[in-house]
Image 1 (cartoon, helix red, strand yellow):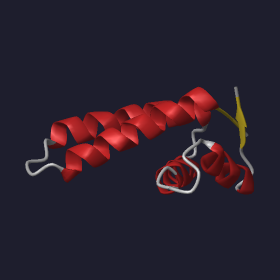
Image 2 (cartoon, rainbow, N blue to C red):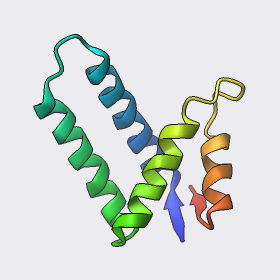
Image 3 (cartoon, one colour):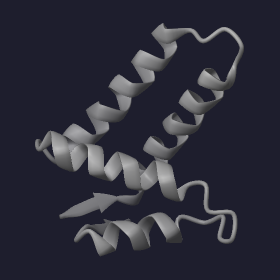
Image 4 (cartoon, rainbow, N blue to C red):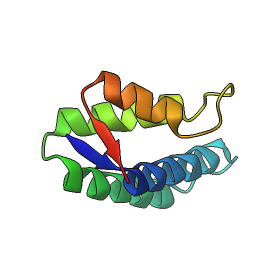
Length: 88
């Protein structure tokens, strides 16, 4: 299954914004819910399978914190291990 790099970037950006919002003292859940909805709208274009969507989201979230390599390579490598292909 192919995943566009631009979609990976969008999801990572939204995940960072959710993290920042949840890290704030007063969390605005409306913002978090809207950003999560946007993430799942992107994932819906990739696959209809909800479990695979969660798997992709989890891989992106976990690997965006890789401090050794601040590129998209760790995310793409982890997706490749699961059978996905990141394309331009």
